[in-house]
Length: 209
Image 1 (tube, helix red, strand yellow):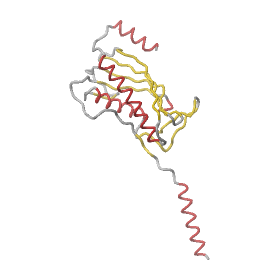
Image 2: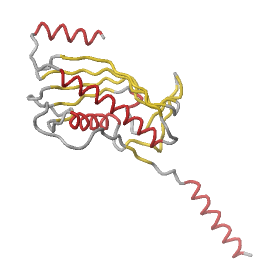
Image 3: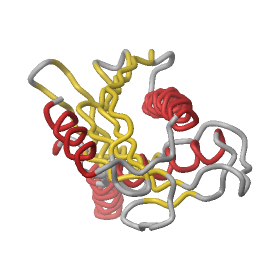
Image 4: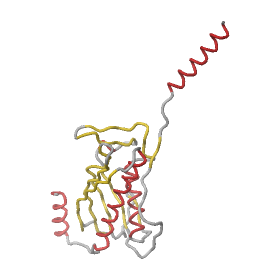
């Protein structure tokens, strides 16, 4: 009888310990668009900084549940952080699309860079598990720090499958669209040094918008 009770106690303890284990944490990363490659003939770029809303400045993946509620996925996290992944993917994608290997990520700086591209994100998360919304303003500066372009961008990418992996894939697809848009603008952007008066006026316009 004592032997049976002892075995029951051991089994109960094992079940209890199994129930107390935390779920396994899964890690995710964004993926760049385009085929790997590059060259030295394309423009030189500094990518960043990127500013995210405070609620996205965390390792956990965040989704929006409504106008006033977000959900934090404690056991589904970015491999690094969303802001560092954002800059990495943007740098890789623009390097591939523009066929240049002269790309550095902020806070690294290059005095000889042709352009710097900064991003000010308003929203970048899945909404109710149905779509990923990316909404932001991005600015292109020339090598002298003068504003050449300031544009707003928004895209909605449907989430075609259930699960966090499909959600992250939609994040990457949104960034692919943004990369194409930025690359098209950089190709057309003039390489010039604005006068002090022009720089002041353009900077005021960007801040006002």
